[in-house]
Image (tube, rainbow, N blue to C red; front, side, top):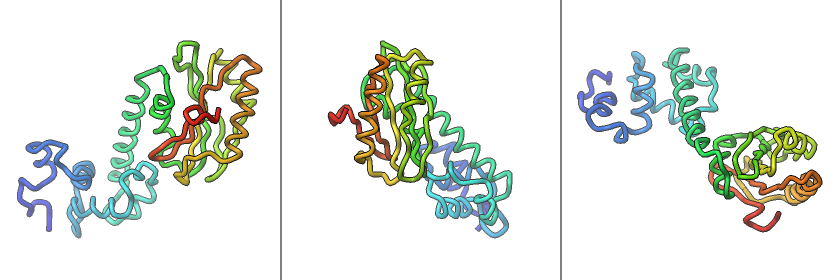
Length: 223
């Protein structure tokens, strides 16, 4: 069935205009983005095909070439999809960064969680803070494998001195979605704490972040 054969009140654009954007399903919203279907399937069916192949929360990681393998998706449609999801990611990142102070593990988690979302490798990120818990900067320290990353004391200490930081919070992700620390995580954290203390800099916390949860060394008295 062609889109023009669907009752006008059931077409996604008209539903958005008259019912509100919150009333539309994911595939209807995607249909508005890509605008047209093909001679073999209308835009709603094409959108359904895309979302059946790729999970909504994974589309920002899908490559242009992967999208082009779907019948009916050309370069323009693929670019439209990538652009919209990238813009959404940037908007979310901007919202999280509107607050430039960190007072708790939850604050740090909210500040960092989008940096780790859907990552298939472990990333270690450090946040550098002044005496009033204002964020001075954020830096990716290392990128590891799918189950291991290196806590580089040298790089963290160097960056902390360069930023004239009073305190540091580090965080890394577990792609396995198990947020509990390993023995190596605990040992490396204590080693980093000692290295920073020698510079009179505090290690406030170490977070292990998954897509839906986090573990705080400080909250669990491992620090």
